[in-house]
Amino acid sequence: MGGDKVYRHEQSQNAQLRQLQSLEGRTDYLEQRLQQVTEYYNVQPEYRDDAYNYLAIGNSLTLITSWGRGICATQPDGDYFGLVKAHLSENHNDVTAYRINFSSWERMGERRQSLDLLNMLLSDKLNLVTIQLGENVSDTSRFEADLEELISYVQQRAPKAQIIIIGDFWDKERNNMRKEAAQNKSVTFVDLSAIIGDKSYQSKEGTPCLLDDGSTMIVSKAAETHPGDKGMAYISDKVIEKIHE
Image (cartoon, rainbow, N blue to C red):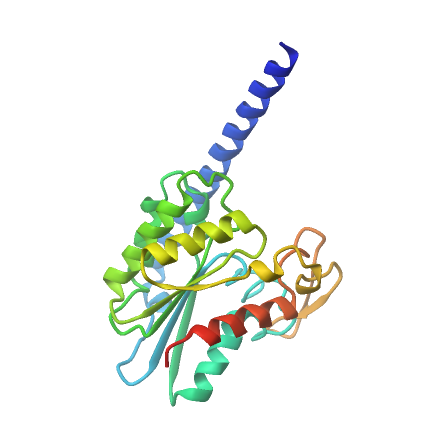
């Protein structure tokens, strides 16, 4: 009987946690939607027919506002997005690249309700879209199906783009789910399973990171499990290997 009570208590706590995360995701979505409406001309991409156009959709590994880039990269262009963009710039005369923190999708109970955040960022001019999402997903019961729905949404609105799904940095189960979703939708998958749990690819508490304005951000204990420079370089190298140019 005691064990049953403990189980029910844990189930209740998990349900409350999922509800809280969903509420946080909904709040983030509404804030981003408001920004898109009120600052339309500042956030509207300027893709061009004569440029190579790249969009990165992800979470804090792709962009966190307080850092101005993927978290824990020590240099402004040292995250995987910046490294991929630099590679593209070496091979194309002109590159336009945008990114969005789409972690609200990860946390929302009904993920499809956040898809319209991508509307102004998706275009038939896009050549490449990378999707790096899943680390913040706690309830994986619909994750693979929802990821497939997201891929379909991108395919419809960016029909000429190569779509690359980036694997999970922390969890092998979610990594495999991403792989399955990519295979089911016939898009490219970048496997990160070889470095999952390898701390040498993670950042470290106390690491100084230079920001765009010249100030310094210090990696916190809570953030240190994110990719460090070695991890970001690994992700970018694996993405670059898969790009069709």
